[in-house]
Length: 395
Image 1: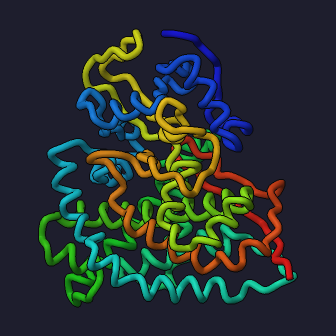
Image 2: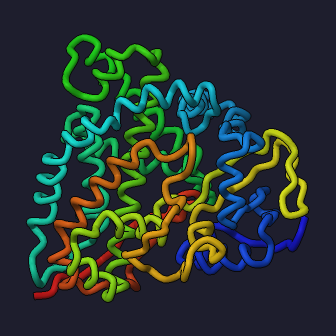
């Protein structure tokens, strides 16, 4: 099975700097067997594309949870997430979810997102220390998704906590012995909470996403509740990761920050490069549905495969100077938000939130002193997100 290396995908150095680790694998063994995680790693751009495109790779992957009796309820909820399904069921679920991110609905959120960003940025004063994750990157997406679903912002702390607990399960924090218990508790709490919201909207519809999904009638009750959980979880975790990572990238590259401040009209191009350079999606798991051979290796039906988006986005076979942040990069077909039928459905909203947040903070960023030695990362197999990003606000 090629070159074997006993490698911990959640080791301290890999969590802090995954690009060095995956870059080494990408050049040595493009189809790499990781014995510790019982998984094949695909790290080159073209191979990751095959993983997204080919029916030989299935997205249905909640099987291991189904084997644990105590996880039966949680597994039933996750099995209805479209990210864990293949067509035609995936097509049915995704078609219903397009209602959430229709261009008109996303555009309607722009004034409210701008107001929320202003509320979060306004208290940032000189000679103070702030955490760009805790004070901005984390709360903003939670507030926005609350607006979208029509749940009270007063409950934000609750569902943000539950979402964080669920992350230990979905994003594969394998270093936590209690991850199944905590993830299960968070997931079922979200299920019960949102089931209550759905029941309330059945009695008294409003102008929110839950009411829209109910009126559409495509999804039965359990699938609708599961879909709302997915939208809340993914809408919070993905955008929070993108914002935090973007702040760090800009503060670590003052030359590129100056370019963006001088040309704020290029913000959309810059966001695509930030997604490529250090996006919120590190890996995307798949199961081999039928035997397939890649680079001389036989991947058998049932094998687990990790499509390493982060490595594909730094593949020199596809990107010039891939390890360099270039906000003006034009040729940029990155995989930072997935690809094909599993392309991130909430991408328009994530981009909108990031555009508004970065635009609002551009005047402030040059006055921030990065405390990089204090920045910490979530120890996650799938996601790439900062836990904290402390900075000092200069005069």
